[in-house]
Length: 185
Image (tube, rainbow, N blue to C red):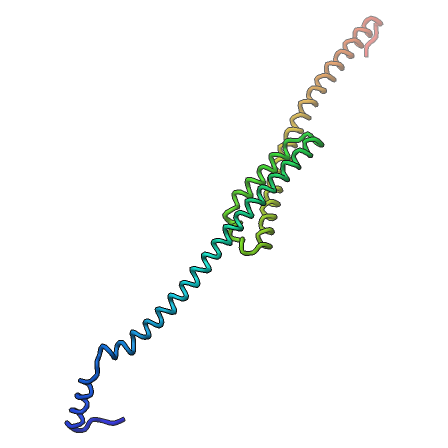
């Protein structure tokens, strides 16, 4: 390191400092670097925007595919419903399947987040359907059990009343018969 020891050195230093163009120095040191960094940032932003555009297009494709899958589920539902109604004459199945379809539709925004991973999407759709089937099957079974229980109680009460009536009729006939014969039961 060299120290300025004389006025001559000081004057030389001032002359050199006067010759330096501060704007040019700033431009050379900072503006070029800022321009370079700005260009890099713009390139990065362009690639991010392009990836978003690609992802948006892919998401739209996956949503369309999801709509097609829902339509396939509805077609399968119609076939199953027709077969099951023929076989079991049951509308409970139709209600369950409709609920499953509604549950899948309600989960559409959530399922759309899995569109970049088809295996995960299929798994999520299966999971939503399974959970919905379990929930709705339990509800339908409870309804059937309740209905069966009510029908059973009504029928049991009817039979009990019928039995009591028949029993009391038999008892009265037996009492009348016993009185005629002069005996008691």
